[in-house]
Image (cartoon, rainbow, N blue to C red; front, side):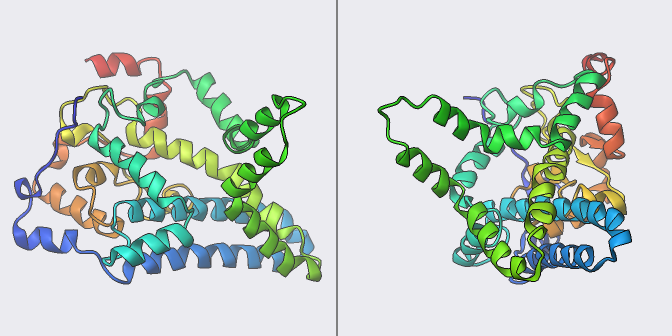
Amino acid sequence: MAVAARVDPKTYFTPEEWAPLARRSPWKGLALLAHAWLVIGLAMALAVAAPSWWKLIAIPLAIVVIGGRQLGIAILMHDAAHAALHPDLKINDWVGNHLTTGGLLDYRNYHLQHHKFAQQVEDPDLVLSAPFPITRTSLRRKIVRDLTGQTYWKQRWSGLFKRLAERKPDQPLWPILKDAVYARRRFLSGMVVTLALTAPFGLWWVWPVLWLVPQATWLPMITRLRNIAEHACVAKNEPDPLRHARTTHANWLERAVIAPYFVNYHCEHHMFMHVPCYNLPRAHRLLKAKGVMGGMLTAPGYLSVLTLASAKAAAVALAA
């Protein structure tokens, strides 16, 4: 099996430079997670408190902001999968399992295979980047499916209903429902708790509108954009470890709504996968100062990556 080439930090950093980059803070990762949940809470509160004539603006804005922080929570779970959220592994794993999206251990086993075989034939995530470049029409269709909830339905619920539809008359229903409830226990418990807290005040709509809608629409779309930016149009079996992933420069608005918590520094992340996300900008600046950036795969913004990934000329550019 073709293992992806590795980067030795000593190639680019002195011991004095590398030590603070690799250091895991006992509070920074937890502070980012607290920030994510605080922003979600504030966005919900502002949407609820907005006068009725402003809700047509406040609610869509809240959906965008909350969906961005939902991605942020998933990104911080990803840091926990790399044992980079907290220096104490027990705390790291507990937080990653219980205060983020959950499923940490299964995700860790899967995701580390992605790093081990990055952009090689054995990469389990290669299926996400292999179809690119695609036509603009195809990209638009995918984005429409994301924003209309079709992608969410397919990924989260269609399998359950398929099992129910294919159930034989003599097959008991309860085991299927039990498995479905267990697999979605965090989702269902969050729904029950939120409805219990809000419904008595006439705010029953907060969970479906301000949690489920962002999760089913904005989150799938920006997750797709993130996946495209990270690995689309990267050559399969790429031998250069500086070109296994792409770093995309993000402005303040992109960081707020589609690229939270330094997720755009993906080339640096693949080069040094145990560096905490909050140290990636510093690694980026050091690499740039050392003249390494020219050999790395980068993009000036998310729009430029989408243009590359959906242009017919992209295949020609890759072959050049």
